[in-house]
Image 1: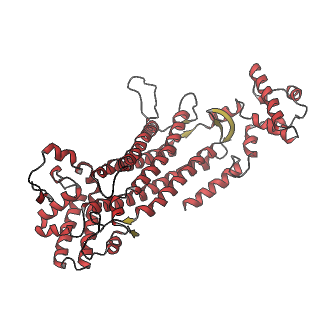
Image 2: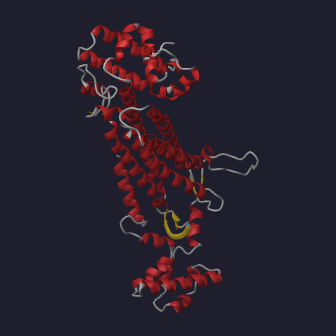
Image 3: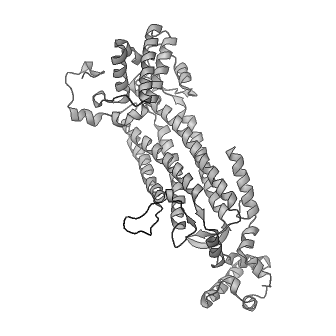
Length: 457
């Protein structure tokens, strides 16, 4: 098969070399974007009188036919034609004859592939933002239900202070909100057209780059043709934003895994997001959460892979840059699936409220309340901390919790303690009192949820 670029060559590569160099195995993902870019390009060529309208209409007709076939998965891609661009150009020429070869007037595969990836990410980032918002809505709905559900808050994975379970869930809402903002901001750098930059130096044809950008819905065009074909910042930024998103999902996944264990038993995942064991009939494994935690590593890897590819490349285009696509496609697939799975897990999980209630009544997470109580009565906090620590140690020796200690034992530790201490040590009161801005107090959590709802409108 004659290469579309083969005029200068006297010898063909061996098949295995073609297979090694070909990208059609993965860049066929860009088929619709490539066809849309070609449609915009040929319309521009017609509007600028670079091609006669008869040729333009014939080429457009062929491209629309290919687009319908692509939508029906009816196109056959060949390794011999290397990539999505040459495959489609060859198909077009086979379909409408030599006039199809005029499509490539005034452009290069270099600006063509860059345009395809800008279009691809522009569409996918919009979808990702929508999925993040759906997940945020689910978190808000669960939080609304559990404002007054008490739960242990942890530091160092040790019981720290009682909190509202809704407060814990809403922490992930705000993480996702920052992720969403990062993706939204990145659109400014995705929504730029490289089309018309040519191989690296522009073209001698009197093209109108702003017109082709307008046809494709781009907000801007690259000001420098070399930058246009060599820039992969927008993909690196997407992979970086995706890595941050996956870090947040992985942290949440770890907590879901812990909470659903027998040791914690704070929640139970729906059967549709769990799996069993091939040998242990009693098992109900949080496999989807574990998979998301594991897939975080591949997204990080995709980011590091592309950073490594571009770190030493001279301008402008180099074949190394073919390695920019698989990681991008894989990351899109991974985070879209992870967001859908996580939203379903959280929406359908059962929260064991009684178990959560028991945990905060059978631990020392109310110890800070006693220290604060003493400090509010004038005892320096460090002394209050020491008194409380000694009382905790006394409880451990006796097998008690602070609420179990008789008043005389408490007063022996400090004469400042009065009978109202038992109300102060109540986990419910402890949470309710933490009414500082952004705190876990029920009123503050309710305010936080209302603010979250406004951000989702």
